[in-house]
Amino acid sequence: MFLDLDPSEFAVPKARIAEVESLTDRARQRYTDDEEHRPLELDSPVVRLVERTRLYLEQEFAPQGALGVAVFAAEEPSLFDVFRLHHTVEARVVVARRPFVRPLLEGPPALDGWVVLMVNRRTARLLAGRGGGLEEVARFADEVHGWHDQGGWSQPQHQRHIEKQVKDHVRHASEALFQYSRQAPVDRVVLAATEDVGPMVEGSLHADLARALAGRVRADIETARPADLDDQVMELAVRDREEGDGDLMERLGAGLAHGDGATAGREQVLDALNLRSVDVLLACRGLAGAAVACPTCGWLGAEGATCPIDGSATDAYDDLLEAMVETSLDQAAGVRLLDREVIRAHDCVAALLRFPAHLTTR
Image 1: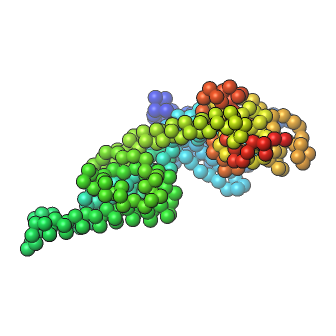
Image 2 (image 1 turned 180 degrees about the vertical axis):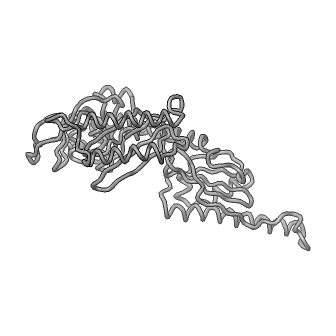
């Protein structure tokens, strides 16, 4: 179930509850006994899941600033996962054999895998991306004495002592980031550091983390809330994704021009998916059409009552794009929904390939 939390329409609980009731009614009306058109039995899995979702959204769920929410529920295997979204979504309820995931891909970049290291001369903080926001995961302060603690030392001696303490503090902060990267994926690093320690922090980063550096943001190291940095980090993430999309388009153009490393068009992409050769699926958001899939071997096609591989009866999909997205994710392929001219020119779908195109022909 996908719930729209656009504050212009659903800012108050009463409006959200009305939306939930509408969706659950739609589920009860749509998913009926096809032969006798009677409601599903009261103890059926669908009814139980719809009711469980309704109760959760009406009685337990707190938006916490989210603009949408997705709930994935199943009895076998047991599943009840809730995702707060940082973009609005079309309200809908789907009962199917597979999770309906495409709306998760249509919003701004997720910050999962992004980490912000904040450092001044005595304090260090580590923020980690969660969905579209940041959370503080570590904070510490190191002892750095001031000029008034000079005691019997000469000024140059005392200054060297302070600078050593600051360098030790920076190394401590960089080591904390490195240790975090060994426990959780770190795809991109953002620095928030005062001018006097910023160069030291960059120079102390582990080589892999230095290569992942996405940029800097400004913040009060001591008092800034994680939410205060959300917009700045999201701006970096959007820029990063746009640069990545540009690279994908270059690869696609080169692959199609040379007839190697890329393919385009519905039939060609379906063939590549069935050969598990897709590295990145590239499709327009408006890609329309139906599909069929084999429940036994996973073969995916545009039509056909039986699977050409094993002869099993196929399942019908009324959403070709969703079927392609699900199959791509099953194969650990990337997915980008992009309305670019080169993709539109090839029936709204293309793919970058894991191995040469001549190996993906029939």
